[in-house]
Image (cartoon, rainbow, N blue to C red; front, side, top):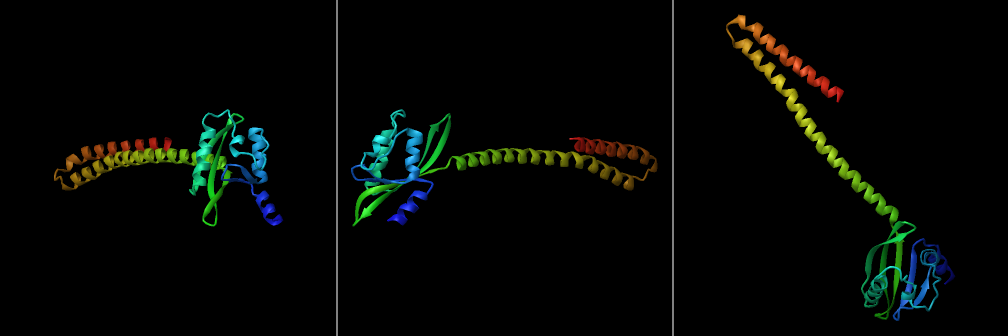
Length: 197
């Protein structure tokens, strides 16, 4: 029993056990500290667990009562709650497990784990992914536009070179070369704009 008690009290998550009449059977030191710190209540074995629920949050007592009742009917539960604390909210993952002896539910075990940092990290990651998706879409549009604007003068040069090759009148070559120079200058300006951007 001393070994189990030692393990029970070294777990950082809050753990408490409740019997069929909603009386607190046992709890670990993390649960005790949370009750003292967050609610200003000192938990006592044998006391009704619902007496430990603060009155300042409307509906909280009914919420926990339904969770205990569900667990006492043999249904495990998993919940995520957010509670205000010192101007900053804390998020907890809560799991309830029925205590079964000889095929009868005699109580429930409740685990509460603070997942505030995890939910904040997930939220930040979600925001960064959304921003990255937006940046990728802008990059795709830029690449499409740039490749189109780069290709147009090249196609013009290619067409003009083909015309020089096929035009029997060599006097037109000067005109074609002027048009090629304009396309090359346009391409050069566009590349400079990309580099500046």
